[in-house]
Amino acid sequence: MRRNLLKERLKSGETTVGTMVQEMTNPSIAQILHSIGFDFFMIDGEHSPFNPETVQGIVRVGRLLDMSPLVRVRALDYSLIAGYLDSGAMGLMLPRVESPEHVESLVSYMKYPPVGVRGLSSDASHSEYQFGPFREFIEFQNDETLAIAQIERKAAIDNLEAIVSVPGVDVALVGPEDLSLSLGVPGQTSHPLVEKAIQRVVDVSNAHGVVPGVHMGSVEALAGWHEKGMRMLMLNSDLGFMMESGDVGLKTLRSIIE
Image (cartoon, rainbow, N blue to C red; front, side, top):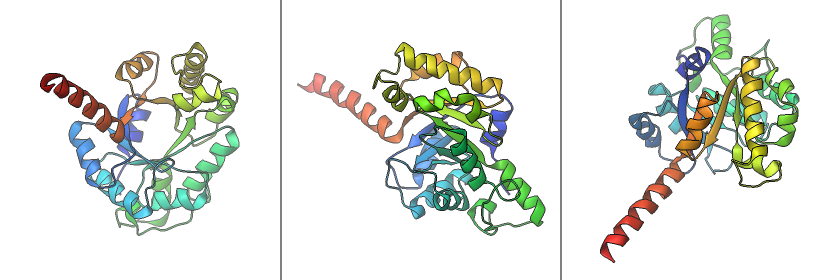
């Protein structure tokens, strides 16, 4: 069975850098991101219309490349969570977390008994189609999955200590744009209210042994938050890279030929 190298690196104190897969449905996106040098990627199952077969194809390539493929789920739905894990996802992120109960349910759906309530499908993508001794299989799978709470609501900031105290949560990852919206300053991700809230995620997460993370489109902003303690960094998305690079290239070319 394949180990979750992303989880191992985070537990050892390393900083990792990944991105969001938002638009590309071809499994080659995993290979492309690996060739660039990203440590991991997360498929956006919340805002993008990926079907289960598409997710499984991308995840399979990511696993073979040891990129610890992740998925952001659309909702706290057992069928979605168990399905993505059986397809081979090595970690899941739940958006719009507001309470410890949300995270408790996420962890329960992700883990096999006695830790959680996940149903058993042993000979599937998540096991590399190799099933060993029953107890060993259960313990291995429970240990290797990465549970991520996305912190993007004021309620999450207010309940942060309880959220990161839930047994089994590994990462608290900030979504700055939604957080700014919830704090009443939409789009102002560098507003003092937002920055204070993000710093609280860093401090409280570290105090409870949970990895703090953040997803941003700006290299400079990510670098700044890394200096302040963020360790799971997500840079932009496949769509963002394409649009930004295309915009710069086209404007440069037009300035030369016109």
